[in-house]
Image 1 (cartoon, rainbow, N blue to C red):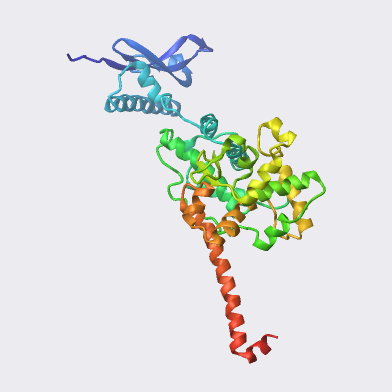
Image 2: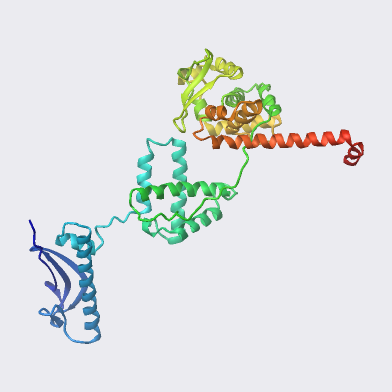
Length: 418
């Protein structure tokens, strides 16, 4: 069955609301007898209007300008109808009006994708990761306020130049709460989080092009810090009279022998400690950050610490293996531990995880594939960063050995060095 469609465009004056002899100009679309009206945001004198020809009378400058505008409106309405026809959309007067006025387009903004991402990540990301996104979003807001003097922008306005300017803004931004500007890797982390939000908007078809298509994040290579065996032993053997420092030291050492992150140590429960395939005690739990299952055999030094704190009143109240302490306080107290033990490195709790990967496991011949599993890495390439640290140590040790061998075979060389 074929359905006929009637379509017409009429320009007219709304004389019912005329003032001082002037009336507003409108376009009326009619499809199969159904009307839709569009205000053309212009007023003209009623006496100058030619209702028969649908135009302004005369050839003066004002008449030519208005009539040319009517001609452009007419073409725009026809184009809107043709677009809907090509898209096989149902043709109505309201549909044509909406297309002409671009009201049927969803012009999503930066704040829209930020809100969507925030709502979407609530049950997917841990709070620590969410906080990083909130920080990135804060910098996005600061940037568009400074660069464009606005609180929001359409996603379709974003381009490669926007990304470059945002990168420059981050590198030059001077935080008020501390002296140092952001390092390159911190800047790249913010841009990567921003990129994930924009990629999400592209997948949602909120934008038809990805402004990041030609952008490549450039990270500086950073070797992971870790404690040497001598440094680790110096902390292990130190006993503190202050309970808070002793607790912090014990938590740090426990991480050095299990590879667990702060959040996984502090939330460890007796239910996470089970007999493994070898009949020994293992830590079996999902990693808080990635939800990946960890299976870690408990080494003797870690087992001693579990036994030490399992009857601690604070542990029993919380239902955890160890008493609770915030990451901020823990890292602050670790600075005191470092000073007392003569450790000059920046001692943070995460350094314990690096120490487990290098000094405790890889250096003692544990295969990198096993270390990767113990750390809960989803890709072995992440673990290979630690292997490179070991290679550097091997290189340094061999360089020292070469020097010693040269001194033995060439006494004159020894005298030169002295």
